[in-house]
Length: 488
Image 1 (tube, rainbow, N blue to C red):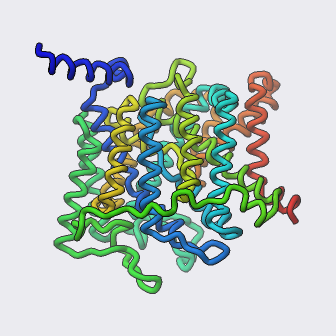
Image 2 (cartoon, rainbow, N blue to C red; image 1 turned 90 degrees about the vertical axis):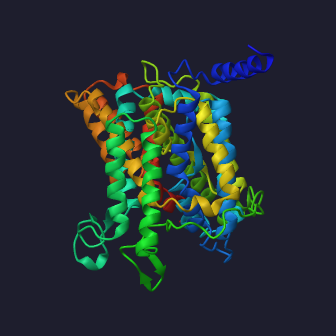
Image 3 (cartoon, one colour; image 1 turned 180 degrees about the horizontal axis):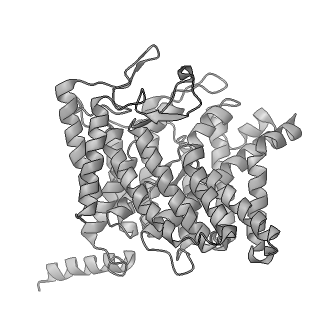
């Protein structure tokens, strides 16, 4: 062996040892493939987040702007996902949290400036980081009973499957004018229509076949094949977007991205929003009590969204130990906390660990190397944002549905004969998709678990920390009347 080849082998072995690739039954090729699959399933955030927080004015009438928000969204996702890979060493990707960004937009920025609102996001991340350093966040993670962790995984499976179905337009909300109490329906009018739906169905079947045949890179391959099919469909039939203008919609159009080759591939990112936050401006705008309650709501949602995601994805990847614990969870949780601060500091809203990481895990990712790959691709997205928008929801969503199925299979590990665990597990599982919130499902599970154990005379089986968490969730669910009582 030559000196050059020995050096290359040494670097490869060093990479293997650092990320524990062989130890976790993976390979560099598998990690690269998984990292790419995760990127393509969550790249939509570079387009969707700007539409949520980049177009809505704050209380002063200021708008952040779509292009600037797109740039900082990609930047935060890139830097924090790479940091998760290098420090956390697990295949978890991070980006602006959906739900959290809507809360920041419509509940916080409606009361103060965008700079003030992002300052509260930074404070929320800082408080969670302190909890991690104090060992409390890891202690909470370890205090959850194993079967409740399993229920969290299953609930997340149903949740992301529903996300995939809704994003693809396969399942839709029924307009109020329909005169029915049924909240969802099949397609835009109770039946499937439009070429984008055909693309989704074909992509779902193709991905299902590839997964059932245990094809390497099945999920990523499914996304690529479906995207190519979508581009052909758009080129032939000129479908167009579902939203044309406030007065004109196209029910049979593409949900978000129109899969057409862009006029330009590269674009220079505008990062002027980085650092545009006021740490304590929100306190001056709405008062100390109201600002603290806003930070508390953000913190609790972020805290348990991440915990649920880590449990669900970690269990699917076989990374949890026999007690359902993730070795080195403190590193993962610390990076996630820093990501919340980084998201606020860059005006991208709080960044958190993404459940779409399960797509990479489903494609074989087991180590932080996959996260590094995902992060590098997000760096590339900074310069090639027009190319990222080629992949429509209808091509990425089949991956979420299939991954949802994979997570659902863990339901067999729940003891449904013991109602003190079965009912909390059931509530955890169903409330995640039914309320469109991981946090709500976890909260309902914790509260009901504590109540059922207590009423059966088995209160000692609930750890003291879990009792505290259950009480905090009671406050979380009753935050509106509490705020009204304290502020009003």
